Length: 274
Image (spheres, rainbow, N blue to C red):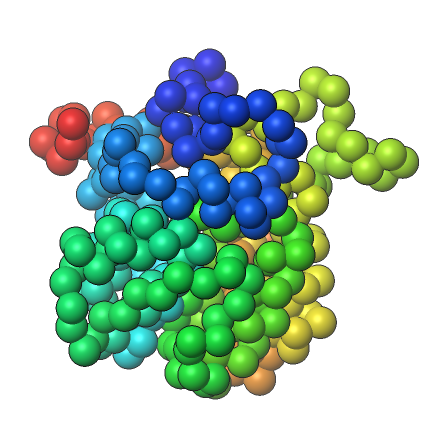
């Protein structure tokens, strides 16, 4: 399975240059703050295209939280998921550390009182009013954010979410494999998808707890191989009605098999995009 999902299909976002395997905020800004030759659609090829990935893999995981009033999308890129989110809310705010991505989203979606896009520093959400966001969404973006950036964002979410607001955050889980003695990944474990090596589901849950938030679910997934290198965390305020449900953690080693099934279905029913 790991050989089938090659870097070209799943990790075209990873930088070509040599350097630290784990991205910093500044490296992320440099990487994404340039005109893209591909708006991101090719990164969904393993699922059979953007629509197949959205309706088959993403929407089933967030359908309980949308449609809603105001959505905040962190790291929209060129709007691969924004195009679906805007049909599921009254207002949408997109925040990205790359000014080029903000320019592209403004150009793609136009100007409207219901849409706003801002460039930030990769950590803060000062442009957003406190207790104004009903749903936060970030997919295939914050996997490249290190622990400092993730902790800063979690602290921001504790202020920006409304009482019963929810956040769905896709982040790295590669740090779960670090050697406790030397703090390094095992030699046989590579990082071809440029994931943060100091982030994990457990660490994210700790950030939430310290910020008076609660992880109501976490799904560890094997993005692009056999290692559970990513995590989907669903977060709510600890005093919200969502926090009354038991917290659940699911280790999903069949995530790429799910992608393959969606790709096959997209071919069968004509949803695949080139």
